[in-house]
Each structure stands twice: as structure tokens, then as C-alpha cells.
Image 1 (cartoon, rainbow, N blue to C red):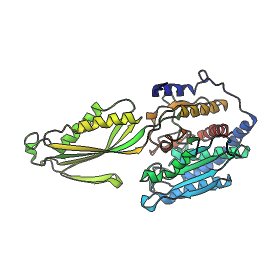
Image 2 (image 1 turned 90 degrees about the vertical axis):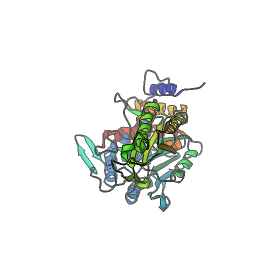
Image 3 (image 1 turned 180 degrees about the vertical axis):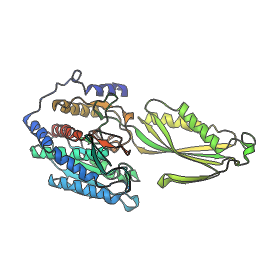
Image 4 (image 1 turned 45 degrees about the vertical axis):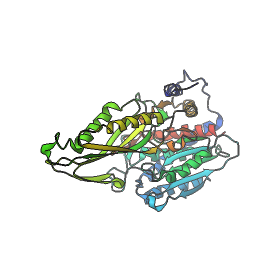
Length: 438
């Protein structure tokens, strides 16, 4: 039977409902009760670990800071008895690398798990955003929710499992990437280890921040939109402005405006977005692609001969991508008199499709949450969050994301965290990991 995305998302929504799920919620067994008790009794230590990590600036381009956070977390994995090592990237990529911690369990015992997090933040050295600030029961700081809070949830969950005697025999790989916020190029290199691990795993869990739905209910992520970039190059016939609309045509700026407005009017559909993030126009245009900036020169009495536009494209699946690109190319090809244009696309993050396997993981996660008395978990729509590392492994293995901490204002000066979400997230994660690896 062919299952549509709408059907799959509707089924996912049922995962968070005690009335509609077909599997009766079970009570916690004695081992699970010990796991929950261990998380709760060590919650202050988890928050202190988070504080230590947040006080280290680890903007993506601050390789030293990223490695320092990695060393802090590596010490935790060493104490757990995991085999931890640093995965270096080629120097030309200008990225810190990744932290990998593995433990090999008994063959055939439960599912082999891949747990994902990231060490870097969007806040580079010198950022005016506070490193760590506690006020009115919230914690504000650089990467508290996105996603050092999620990293700490992974560690706290595994520590609770170990203290409860429930980690022995489990096969678990943890990869904390050092460049999730700005993945190193080429992607084939920066995500090679992640994909190799996915091919040896049965399920992947990612601990990006938990995002509530529009009604404030807790969710997890079973699908995420792909991302691509596009470059629009527009040319015009330079000349005296007195001849615009006439002998010299409309020029590059009017042509670019026509194209962008047509994109807005003719390409949009549910789940699809395309954003022109940078535009440069005039008679002299220079673009610095590596640093996402540029310069332009022009005079008001001269018809512009050049415009460059950079944008992104986010889509649910490849069929939607193909429709969007075809419409955009057709719009670009129309041309005003005296103008020309071309557009090129480059893929970045693949889509994380909503699959039955992902929905099963959500069902198990929601059941663990209910059994622990922490309430239902619903499915977050794919268009409600940005791109993430889980998308590089989702085509290879059943995947679930959004298992991290809860906060507001990610990537902004107001990024904050609900500190109680660290304990809640660790309880849910520990129970899910325990049940999957049995």
C-alpha cells in the first residue's frame, strides 16, 4: 500500500496519544525505576557539566574551543568505559573535527544505536551574547539549547544506565560533530564517519533541541526538509539612465526584481521555501562567497549591468525539489528586453523522509515518556525546523531527532534553556536506549 506523507504524519501524531496508540503503556520495571532515580539524583551534576561546556566558546570557526569542549565531554565517555577518540578533518577544511565514543556490546543483543550531537555553536569568539546567565528559572547562554544541552542529555542518560547496571552489553556509538552549524566542505569528507557509523547501526537518535508544537506540546522529529543553495546571475545592457525602458532595455536590477518576485508568486507550495539571502547589483559587483559577503558599485544615472543573488531552497522530498527548480529555471529564462540571467543549484543536506521506521521510534519514545509520567510526545512537522546532521544518516537507518533540551531563541542573543528539560530529556532517552538495546 502506498503511504502518503499526510498519512504518515497523522500516524505520528497518534504516537503521543494514550487514547489512540494500539500498544498499552507499560509500567516501569525495577531496572527502569533505578535508571530514572539515577537521572534524578545526578541532575545537579548534569547541569554543572552543561555550565562548564557553555563557558567554553565553541563557535564553528573556533577550532580550539570546539576541541576543548570535545575534551571535556571525552573525559565523561572515558569514565563510562567507552572507546573515545578525536576524528580530525583535513587542515584545508578549517574545521575542528568530531568526537567519537563507541562501546561494542554482545552480538545480536538489541539494536545497535548511533547517538548524534554537536559541539559547535553559531556564536564565535567576541560574541556579545552572555556565556551563562541564570535568571527567573531560565538559563541564557551560547548554545545552551542548540545543542550543548542535548549533548549533556546523552551523557547523563548513559551515566544513569551504567549506574543502574543497564549499559553492559549495549552496542552504542556516539558522534558529536564539530561543525554542524556550518558543515565543512566537501560534505563527503566531513560526514564520512557519520555515514559509516549509520551503515553499522540499526537506529539513529539525534539530540537537537526539542521544539514544542503550536499548542506548546512536546514533540520529536521524524522528518526534516532538505536544503540546497542557488546562485542567480543577472546581466543587463549598461548605458545612460535616460534610455532605461528604451534602447538599452531594463537593466540587470529590474530583471533581478522581476525574477525574485515571480519566484514568490509562482513557485511557492506547502513545505517549500526559497530565500534570497544576499543581493549585489550595479555596474561593478564583487562577491566573496567564502565569507558570504561582497561589494557593489553603481551610479543612479547608469543602467546596472550586473546583479548577483545568493539564496537557499528547502524542500520535503526530491519530487518537490525538481518541481521548484523547473519553475525557477523557467522564470529565469523569460528575460526582460536588454537583460539575461542564469541560475545554478547546489545540494547540501538531503531530506529526512517520514518513514514507518522513524514513526516506530517515535512510538517507542512516546511510550517511554508516558511510562515515566512525563506526558505524550507528538511529531513535529518537517518544515518547523532547519537542517541537521541526522539528515546525512536518515536515508541509511531508522532515525529520530529532537530528543534534546527545551529552550527558546536558538541562534539569537536570547537563546535560553528550561533547566528542568535536561532531567526530563535524560530520563526519556535513557529509557528508550535501554529498551532498544535489550
